[in-house]
Image (spheres, rainbow, N blue to C red):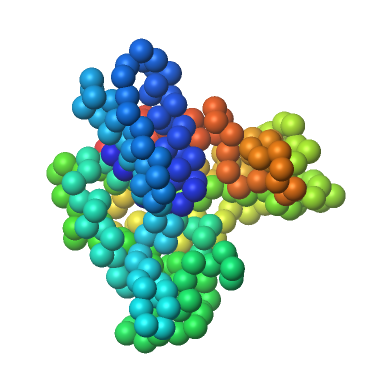
Length: 254
């Protein structure tokens, strides 16, 4: 199987490999961690769990004018065809500006443009991805999952504490089963796109359960020299373990 996406895909890959190793700690394994590709292999079971860093799912090509994000091209998908399970994720990186933004221009309809509405760009790219899943994946042997939209907690209003600066002081989950903040717009966009597919990917709906956990981020503990708080990623063991348990349960349904 392979996870394809950004650092939240990596988060889920790390969680799953740890869970599998914990289930049989004596099993031999090999591990390769060299961005953009990560592999964890159990020779005894002939199982490989991979992760590929591909945060937009569509292509970024190096051209004469610079790096171009091609919203209607997904040549990178050729590397994913032979897997039995594909788990995709994309959302967070669509809203970065320079210097974090890893492209210089966008290509749409054969035209090169400097920028555009990022939510609209995401929607076009995910439609390209959906067409690829419908046309290029052999659904008789390969299952396809879309990870859903994982919540961040950089504003107190995200978790019902208007005076909180971010997640750094949070020690407990949001009480109850509803979030003080609305779901990400990416959630509704993906549900619509998946609903229009001929062979829809399974939507692993993690949005609400992540919205309720401002306490479960690495904060500053992942890197003591880091002055800011990581309120995007998740501690392991932790929230991504529940994603993998839910995904395992879903496999019994489709």
